[in-house]
Image (cartoon, rainbow, N blue to C red; front, side):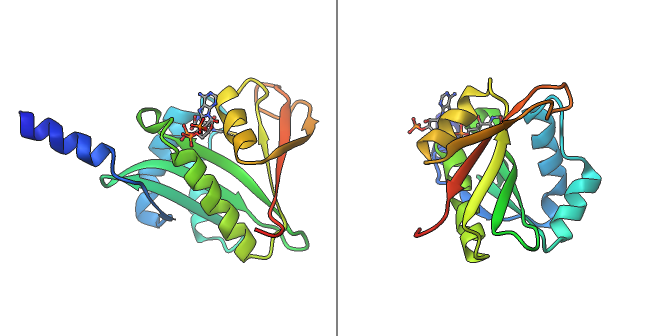
Length: 164
Ligand SMILES: CC(C)(COP(=O)(O)OP(=O)(O)OC[C@H]1O[C@@H](n2cnc3c(N)ncnc32)[C@H](O)[C@@H]1OP(=O)(O)O)[C@@H](O)C(=O)NCCC(=O)NCCS
């Protein structure tokens, strides 16, 4: 019993592995989506599409072989603005820097694609996400009324990727 709990603690504290997602991650990605968002969820069909698309990168954070985080970034021809469409960390893994690590990994991918800015939308009442974005140097550049399925507005945040 004692050994078991020590092993679990050691694994829980292991640094997360951040990598691009594979098709084999699909079920775990959908499960994380389900528990992280109550609406505006990414569907199985959308995830399948993004996992195969050259216009999208899905990143995952894995810890002790469990998928504990995901990020989806979208690219469009003719613009150097990458869009962070989704970022989610499993409830039990929050507050340990994994969201920040995924955000940094996404920014690096966007830079590697010659993007100069990373943009995202967030609910104005999402204090955890806004705290993370502010801490990571994103700035609020505007808002979009009636953005989410429930009619809520979104705040738009942007990270400058120049010079990094
Ligand atoms: C928002 C979310 C991704 C943050 O992930 P996380 O791994 O817990 O965040 P981190 O541990 O990397 O925190 C980084 C910084 O964010 C801020 N932050 C994180 N959680 C916070 C909270 N609950 N309240 C205020 N600030 C918070 C802090 O500034 C923190 O830095 P610090 O620990 O040095 O103070 C996570 O809470 C989540 O998945 N929420 C549900 C899904 C969601 O809302 N996604 C964003 C949609 S736009």
